[in-house]
Image (cartoon, rainbow, N blue to C red; front, top):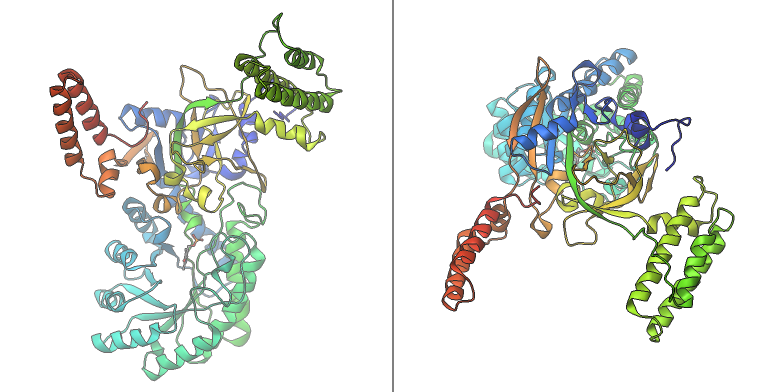
Length: 636
Ligand SMILES: *Cc1c(COP(=O)(O)O)cnc(C)c1O
């Protein structure tokens, strides 16, 4: 393994460097002298929690792995950083308006999460964005601040619209964003019907396209937003209905995880001009909502690649403020209050998934002993093994492949026994391993030889489900930082990928961050027999929970909310128990009581027919009954 620091013993810092921890984890994740990951939920300002001690403390409370640990202080810190960045930009550019953000609920709808955001965001009148009726209900029940915005996006039926209008009478500040051309008529009808109107926004379909995964969220064929002609028609329709005075907000959203800030600038300029036009058409306006898209630097490479961003939070705020100012001032348009719907950037950092490794599988390492009566093919392989030197790696590998092929042919023709074939394969693996150990650390050797490393890699079996806890790794090839959360003071001696518990060959982590690119294998340690080996999957607080599914009936994991205690240590605020087997079975319409009853009847019959003892029947029923009450993951 490349150990790049000047020769000397492996240090914790080498471990941190290997996984890029300081690049993506700063300021929340770091290491201590014990080689453990530590969490600084308030960044540089507050205390530190040893993640291993935390996991042990939770396990002692019967909260088994896998565990989703939510650090609520990180959520609050992200909110603070977002506001501080906009405040600095506003001061720096002498912007005559302010920033007032909302959290897009779809990013993480968990009650404790939304509650925490609303509570922490109160001092800035931070609001919520709803994209469906159910999310509107969440926003309506949790947001109790007349100055906070409640942005209503998504498809809206009459009841959604009327609920939003009535929410305004209740004293909230809902903005109904027109995303489809036909919505304006329904807003007019609902307003007539209730004799009141909501605040109205329009979502523009910009022609500026984002690159990357969500690039098609904009442009002429986008699912949402009004084209320029539709936007003008809508404005006229509002004017004719006497509702133009309620048109307050222009919204756009050019897709999540904007990698390249140049794209954002183009979109802002386009939106800034449209905003000015709407103002000139007589709409009072007041808000420009730049949508989501503020990215997360998952791999710490600061590049315009999929798992990264080529800008910081401050760059983002600066560009929003400066560009909008440049658009408005020359034409005398009063600058708007700036709204963003930053979800990923707020909610990614605060949760960490920790799971244990149940075992590993790897190609065999042992060289079988030479035997006197070894057939020629085996003797050839032994000879090849003994002759491997740094000078003949390619030649030796060619020989190995040749002899391995010979062994297979000989077996097919009946000249090699099964044990002899097994020894030939073991010898071929042993040669491959020896060759790969002698390969230079740089990329100078032929690709075929470099690929040997991957074929010799280990599979680490993790106690989790990719489909439940990190679905985007499977669905859209998203990268998250993944690394052991302890033993960072030990140099890893294995390369491996991580397989999950499902019976699905896609259920694995086989792409890992690597400075703007990805790599198929992760440096890992050999698990010790008497010690769990714990892996953390980081920056997964956005989208993963709700997108996760019940594949193979692995349910939600235990989740906990952790806060720094004022005097040091931590507080365990909420425990959200993971699904039991009963829960996931019921989700599929099975009836656990009925299942037990059927089993009881079947076992009575087996007892009568003397196939099963009463004692074994009792044990079987008791195993099934307790399994129903337990988590869906493997118990330690
Ligand atoms: C998904 C979405 C967001 C959130 O995007 P992030 O990239 O997570 O910040 C904001 N606004 C709208 C309209 C969305 O659809």
